[in-house]
Image (cartoon, rainbow, N blue to C red; front, side):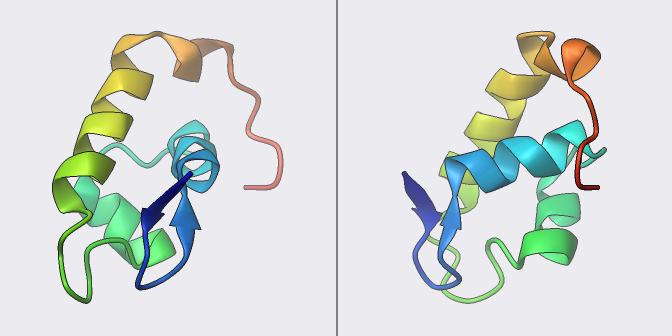
Amino acid sequence: MYICICHAVTDREIQQAAKCGASSLDDLSETLNVATSCGQCSSCARELLKEFMSSGSQLEAQADGC
C-alpha cells in the first residue's frame, strides 16, 4: 500500500528501511523522502514505523539490501 503518494513510497519500503536501521520519521525522510513534500503521510509513516518497531520484527529481520 502506498504511504507517501508524493514519492511513491510503500509500506514495504518503510518496513525495509526499518530493517536497515531507520527508527524515526527523520530517518525515513532522509532515506525515502517520506514527508518531505506535502506532509500528509507523516502520521501514517510514523505509526507504521512504530508498529514495526514494537512488534519485535526488527530483531528477526535480516538487513538484506541495506
